Length: 259
Image (cartoon, rainbow, N blue to C red; front, top):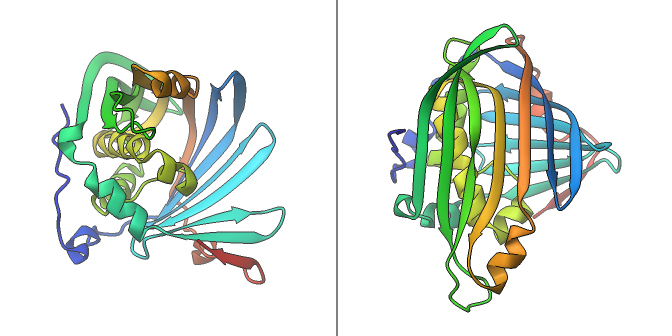
């Protein structure tokens, strides 16, 4: 079981993680939702307390930049050259209101070992459950359930940098998904954040096969079950080459929309 340390600390302490090398991680991702399957390449780059994520799935390219210190997420539309800048402060408050008592976390080694991208990776069973309110007000009990096997490398380069970033972001109440989705489903994003933090504290994410879904009774639960998602990833390479600061900024000349 992962030791949970999500506490209300002053921002200056939350963001005081030491900075080390820049890290880039490339993976292949696949999955499906609502009967549609998707696959493509993904790149995560971390420089201190900033993270840039790029993914191309089903021909659609997405780019996002999460800045923990500024508490903002930038979503780049590369076709229209438009940057949507989301102030994460209010959303972070909502995330922090979901207490650890609302979460059930099962994270334990399975004894399985695999070599992935040249690294020795240990297998873990993961399952996180978080209670969520019925938005219809009918009082139905629902849970977001995220689980499946993951493989983590404890000695891979970049492990410490990823852990520093994910722990700082989780303590600050931030998340790594789409801000619009987080507004509608804060419980799901909270569960994903805690899972990613637990994984980052243990080792570098080499592979994962996750199911993200809902459980419960009533009409709303039945609707939400149709939105279940599968998400798989496999590490291809890790690099500690220096990253330009420009990768974590809105490109010059782009239109900016503040959200």
